[in-house]
Amino acid sequence: MKTKNGNKYVPISLKASEPISDKQLIEFSRSHFNKMKNRRTIRDFSDRDIPRCIIEDCVRVAGLAPSGANQQPWHFCLISDKKIKKEIRHAAETQEKIF
Image (cartoon, rainbow, N blue to C red):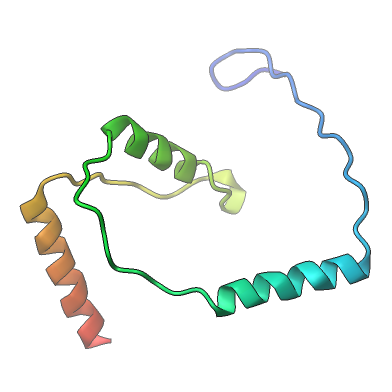
């Protein structure tokens, strides 16, 4: 089998994981629920500039997320201009007030 760019496709075998008992699954589920129940949003952001290559890597990873029929139908736009980011924030907050 060949990939879209013509390279030979070589699948990577996944090693089988040990089965998890119902008791362990319940414990994991409750632990996750408690973490999510106690989480909070923090809107205190650093003024530190992040290297663009790190942001681009994050966007590349987000683009690999599964989607229906593996189509990845999303588009990303990186905004670094502070004025434009402020305008987007204002528009988003205005939109939130409508709903």
